[in-house]
Length: 283
Image (cartoon, rainbow, N blue to C red):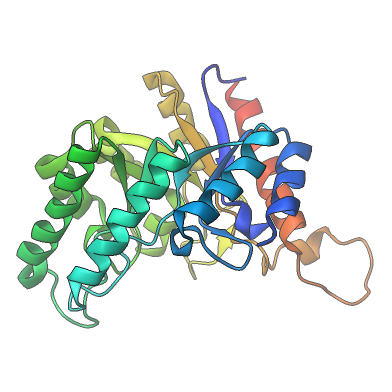
């Protein structure tokens, strides 16, 4: 198996109940969580005293945070920035309390059916404020290539990296998001590989963008993970299944009976198994 690699995941896709999240992570021998939602709401919505209670339950179970799966930067570029900056400052406090090394973030949703270029200056000004605060607070931001944000395609992610990359601003590589943006993932990887510090494991189909288990889509997951391993990557691989409505699940059923959706644990377990299969092939 890949030495130095660490598995994590968005356990709120299992369930929002923290105790059950912990139980399933332990069952799968995963010691990290990319915490986004827990016990009914987003982690960043909790007060620091409440966060301390969540931390205690996790740490008592031997589970640490790989990252805060925050919504920072996931507002419209035309929205009021000041309240969002205050949420960011609170998120930084939470990251320190939870001893999380990273905060996952985004570069703002662009207006529909408009060119991105006129908003570049505002995007960079606001991302710059995040980075300055992160630097002063000694926490590292991870920019995710989410569809419909400024940094959706590799070239615009690269713009952000060239401007802000350093100890406190790095890249998340998300296969499925690139596929859904009709971006070739190998080309994206080659452009962004010097900046990648974290990887989201989910795959998607080019035809309709639907999410499928890693290796079953058009994200070229196995090839890129192989290249990452050869490059000496030793960071996190974080499961983000998005498989509750996975259509291919029905083909795995033996009976002709009523079709059912995957529950959260089934979807997460399937995603985990698909990743392990790829890691086994890579060796």
